[in-house]
Length: 235
Ligand code: PXP
Image 1: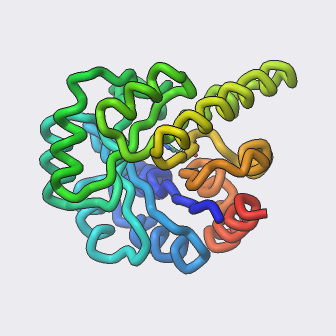
Image 2: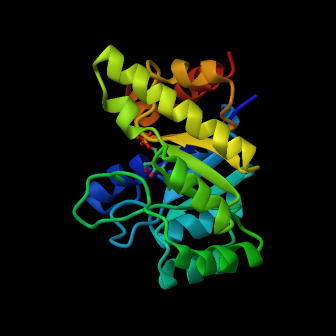
């Protein structure tokens, strides 16, 4: 059984459009959990464009599954994480001008100290990287507990041969992550149509999905959207 992490950033995006109080991301987290989500994922961005510090604090107090905090490896964010203690921190790249996380994190040896600091605080550390074998080896060397493979390129491809090539790359990367003893996660751009190729590999332990689930929820409701995806990843 693979776990499903629901990224609720988009609920906060709608709230921030009016700078008001609805829709409430906490309600989304609660409905997602009641519908089978194994984890709630949020990205506290430097520009606070969607999720706010208040959301992360309240989620930490109220969710019953696991909290996965996506963040940049900055001193400010590391200090917030050490205080709030999410179950997992996923280190992601962050650029102010991007619409969403573009591309994986380029790991460097000096990130080892940030990873250690988080792990010493009892937090699992995952790194969001491209399906690149050298990056995966480095993730292992600098102490990552888990690797989330950036599936954005796969999700955006339309040519069947290119999709097949990218899937081969992802599979090879996933095998290396497993051999290295790290947890294997996939995320970004995954939806009700493209998830099955990854499910077929029977290697991923967790998927983090946001946009397609919240988009579907506009028409079908969040509970149904979460339940459907949960069924797809475990068939
Ligand atoms: N995983 C990571 C690390 C992300 O940055 C994002 C986007 O915030 C997601 C998963 C979810 O991506 P999507 O919203 O495209 O499903």
